[in-house]
Image (cartoon, rainbow, N blue to C red; front, side, top):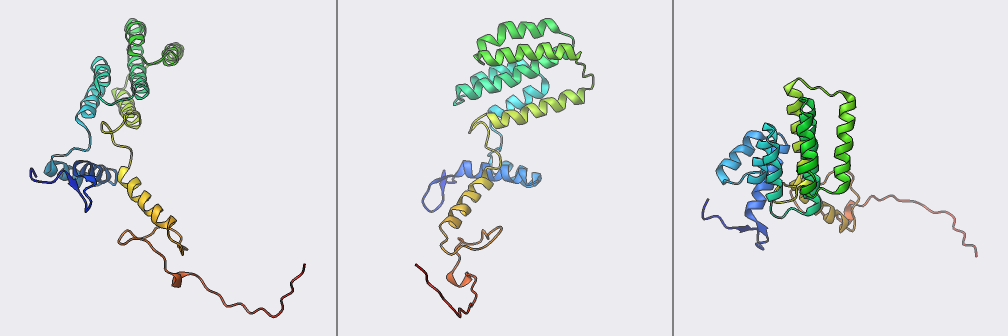
Length: 224
């Protein structure tokens, strides 16, 4: 695939790599995992970025220090998104320390690591409040599967926060197609169809498709 063009389409406006990546994402979201994996292998283009794949592996392993460093090192990530992502990671980190009964490590993270990570004063207060709440709840999660599920949920939340190209917006291809279809419907002068429209051709209702009805008028009165 080395000779493949970097841009595709009649006008050369579509980046080939991004186009394939959103197709792979769509295949995964539709449940065609084998097809998506084959396309990744054949094209050499992965749905998940290298940065996010590494972050995912570290979160699932519970290597929180590496997770924090990885997020801080991500290029092109806005300050607000970075602060939100760090807050979620710190929250899970503190929760797991408290669950293990390691209060001293939880407090050390809150006092030393959180303030220098620029997550914002409000988030620092929220983390401190969460520690107090969890302590009052006498939190205990002995089942490793519960921790694993919480880490997976953390990854899902991070996918919504981290920006492209680190993570693709959810169902990106569907959104792009729906945007085009909506634009065609909006510009259709005689549009009168309900429900989905065909993707096989550009949408355009003809005048003949307008509903017609013959009405006889026997009496007309115009009043001023």
